[in-house]
Amino acid sequence: MFRYIKYSLFFIVGVLHAQEDIKTIEKPWRVGLHYVGNIRNENVFSASYNGVLGVDVSYVFAQTQGVDFRAAIDLHFLSGRDADRTFTRWAVNDMVMLNPTLGASFKLSSKFRPYAHIGVALFKIKSEIPRSSLQLNDPFDPVFTPGATLEQSKSFHALTLQAGWEWILFSDVQMRMGYTYLPIENNVNGHLLTFGLGYRL
Image (tube, rainbow, N blue to C red; front, side, top):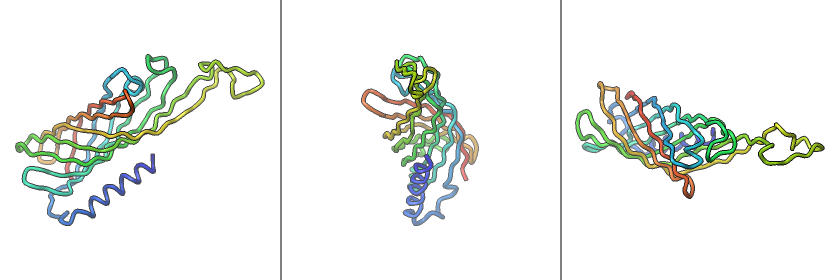
């Protein structure tokens, strides 16, 4: 996870250096806190996690009349659901999803701004499998002792497509609602909803 954060920081720094007129943009930074919901979609990803909270940081690196171009990083915290669900025979651990993106917001009015982003989600699924569920039992080998658990993990990276809107509440305070689509694997798609507040710096 720290490696992914490092790469994302390099990504943001590269965008900053690519922008020559940074000082001409007023308050380009935005930090926010949001709720994230994981929509049930009859697959192992949606069945294994509940959305909890997230934080997001974005930076406007270029502007045209009516459009802000920006780079962003979202961190989503998801809680693993209990075992014995329809799609999982074991418990999964809590997860942090890192989602760097590039996108644009559109100033349709002084208050309302829809946005669209594209990026990549980086995360790791860790699970604890009861050894008893594997039907392996060797009294002379402690590895197969009943009651113990096996741990396994798998790293994923998936394209993300985001869309949503921002509503200006006060001069520097924004309300934000968005949707993120993640095509993780064949027949495994994630659907995340976010709702939160942000502050311009």
